[in-house]
Image (tube, rainbow over all chains, first blue to last red; front, top):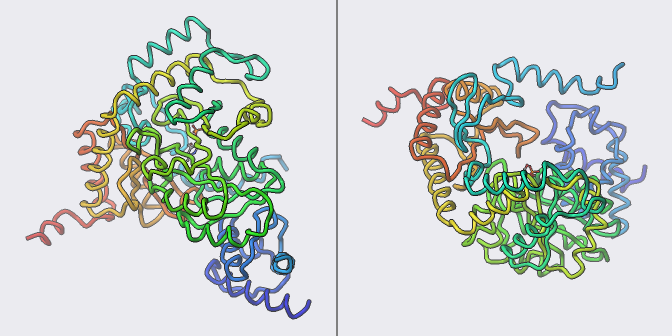
Length: 83
Length: 407
Ligand SMILES: Cc1ncc(COP(=O)(O)O)c(C=O)c1O
């Protein structure tokens, strides 16, 4: 994991805050749906916040491939690099 | 493990919902007496949740047209238009809809759901981008899933948010298609199509408006919210349904895009399903005529909508953002909404219980839809029942309390 990924993960964890039911420890290996209990609508809403935070477009079909917080960070890094 | 095991959480939720009383997903009317009344468990019940905006389901002229088509052309077409061919009525209805909207082209689909599914999934290809409102109807989400385009959501009814997302995509070479609804089906809020049209012009995107709940309802001639906002020229595709103001079943899309008709051999939800039966085509055609000939239906509808909206607001209920024929009461919790819905049904008032995840922002709603066919007495009776149940359940302050406060 490089510094950019760490920074993205930190931002993701920060953005997840409002959608969480209970306080949990989030790591890059945390599964967004299984461990955090976000339904698909909550995931889509949360991704919208990330799009604004990182000023990238994260298409819905890319989200479908994402399982963990780390996967999401990698996706955002890639999409950001492309811009 | 059975193949249905994955639905056990859904089953548990559903069972719990049913344990409160009536099953909101399988209300069974013994008889439908009129556009605004049905017989439920032996009791005359006011129908205030049917999307029957103009009350045309029992229109005599539409019924006569349907019966004649049924007698002369039979019960069904038994196949799709590309395989079995079209009947004269299919073309007549397409022409009538194109004329009504002042457009060159029209395609009729077997349902409104399929019209959205087919149009949206086919218009954008794998190199294109589809932008949808976050509160879009299921048919729009399903179209997004079925298609191959990149899908981006923007914040509900927020043209600035759409603009921002389109700006991020400005280097993307593909076509962009923006999809919005004229009136949103859960809260009855209309889209700011004028502002969306401006974003579309500035960014070179295409715009599709689903007027499912606004056709026959909004606009000087009833064409919907794009007409009401005076920006029809900016709307590339209008989708609509026959299942609401036109009192039947089916869907359509109109457009001025040259070569539109190529979609008839490209759009799978159009091609691979049986076409509408002649009787449905005939009643729809006649109801469309009635919609055009009788603007008074629209005025009565809006009068009823405003009466109900204002009445509920005056009682102290929290309602949607604007008076439209969809009037929703926002309740504090799912449990209250379920109890409220059951009590109203027992008292002879039918409307829709709308719960998350089908609702925006996880709201618990009682959703009503008003008809031009409702009498003032029916609207007032509905308001009385809302007041009674609201007090019983503590959603509204008790009556004595209200009086004391007024003194
Ligand atoms: C906004 C919207 N679009 C499309 C549809 C689909 O229409 P239909 O029920 O006629 O298939 C509906 C209603 O179900 C709707 O509310």
